[in-house]
Length: 179
Image (cartoon, rainbow, N blue to C red; front, side):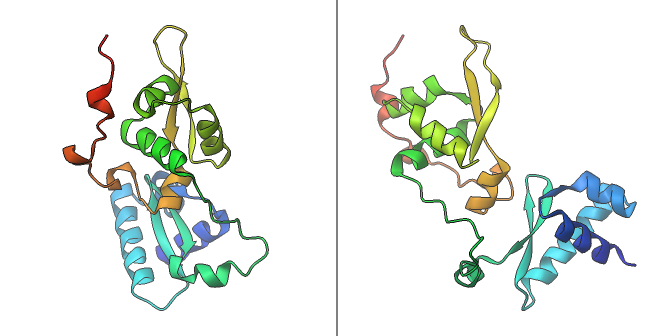
């Protein structure tokens, strides 16, 4: 049995992303060879008339349906609803994505408003998670994005986030109080 077939079966059976290291262990190859096999598979999926694609998610790999087939997939009763986020949620999520890990106080300093409910919503939707505690007084929680965030927004890793230009940084920074 060839390695591509084995990887495809493992990823299909898992349903969830599988780490490169685990796939290499399963097919008894080194990580570099396994990464090459995955890249070849990804190319084949992208350039064939198939309903699935192979995605890398922060060092793990997963089989997913192609986004252009969403209208057909949505006809299934069990498919999760598209996540509709408020502008406040997008704003908070972008602050976390570009600055993670961050505290609630940091987010609120940038946004200028209480962010408790927005953070709760993002956590309920599994777009962010707690990433430990800061060493600052009171040991506030730190937040970071999740693998689900990468999947929902179509990123392979955080390195795929579009770069921010200085003219895109909100003027809030100019209005921040100086301690």
